[in-house]
Amino acid sequence: MSLAQITLVEAGIQRIATRMPELSVIESLTVRATTLLGRELSARMDQWLASSGLSEIEFRALVSLFSRDEGDASPSDLCAALAQSPANMTRVSDALVERGLITRLPSEQDRRRTVLRITPAGEQLVRELLPSMATFTQALFRDFSAEDKTRLLSDLKRLFAALDGLSQYKPAETAP
Image 1 (cartoon, rainbow, N blue to C red):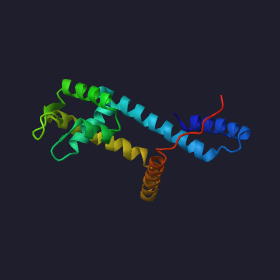
Image 2: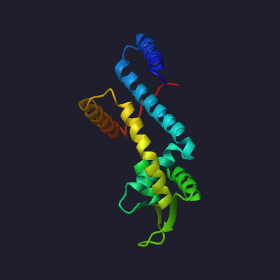
Image 3: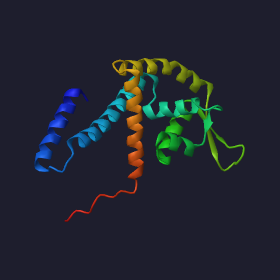
Image 4: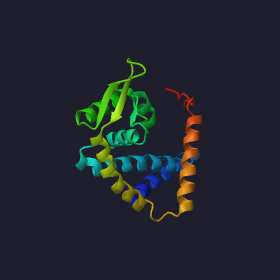
């Protein structure tokens, strides 16, 4: 995705708006651009992580465990933190266990529950990868002032809050 492609998307939305004046061009383009940006960032992360043998979601799972004081979490905690389904979290966990980057153990408090824990090899990999991730994000935001970044983050949080508020929203039924 490039800025030129966003320009094409904008032109398409503008054409639709001429036929449907009730369509908000700026809101539609913002939603589309945000969606495309998320996909592009995820694809770039996958490319960057390919040499380490990790997918973006596997990396985020490792970083999530690395960020916790004890280096562990339940699969359901990771599902919530990473916005993943239980089935996908199982697949991710299986891949990380197979590579020796995390372990899957019964909980000491409740043997029916499972705990995922980052291993020393997983910690080492995170420590190797995070510095270049920081370099990437710094380069990505190099033309943004501190105020720009703060405002962008605040606006994104407002969008998340608005989306949360629409969780019960159902589009109007259309006639067959």
